[in-house]
Image (cartoon, rainbow, N blue to C red; front, side, top):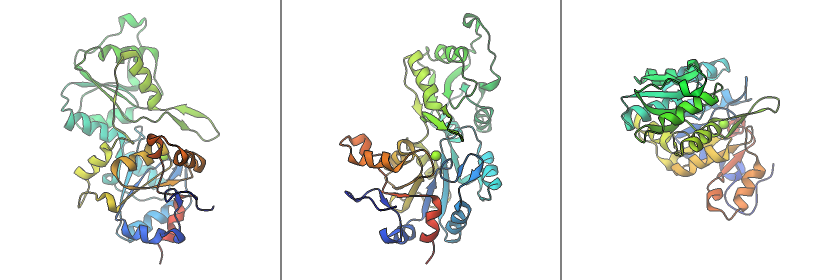
Length: 311
Ligand SMILES: [Mg+2]
């Protein structure tokens, strides 16, 4: 694939475009997972070798995922099934970071009403938060007889395959109290499934709650830089130096914009959601918001880093 013309950004990352020099100059790699390391049940070819190569060269690696349906341990287990080695301390998912936000930033002492999975509820409980809702939430009808818990002090919206009219009603009922916090794990609008199906993501569900409640959610996941700040506060070693950090992701509106918001260089990998054409369209746009969604580089696949790690 030829390098793009018309700008210094969005070049194909290769030996010819100083790829080895860039990789040598970077000490921390922030990796998205879905669409970068794996697609559905399959690891992307070469991903394991790249992770091993980064480790062998002393690079720090963090997995920064908007997926709130897997705990840190579950991400490590998923990586292991694909032959990819990692420690829980390297994993920053939106469930874990939402728990950190509610506990340490918002200093929530009341309960969290969760629209989301059991894994998301588990991350909150592991952080010492009290949880109600989740997939076991009762579905009384009519809505007028729904029991509201007077101890709820926050509504957290995540990826919720059990989203329903009753749960939407409960969430916006809690949010009628202006003291009730409103937080969303991530803004992802949709997710691709193997076979061409698309499913609504947390962003779609959050939009429904926002319209019903007339409020805006605080969004934890990419492109917000909150996860970057979480790594800085909790990660091992020196704080992240943006000039020596590289973000690799498959989605322009989350991963690449996250990199822009954190002041780090970005690489779009073409094994996931966003296409090279979309990156080119952003680059050609005069809209500043779209300009921020242009990666510094692109690769066909994470495997392209193998060549850049040698020599
Ligand atoms: Mg992804």
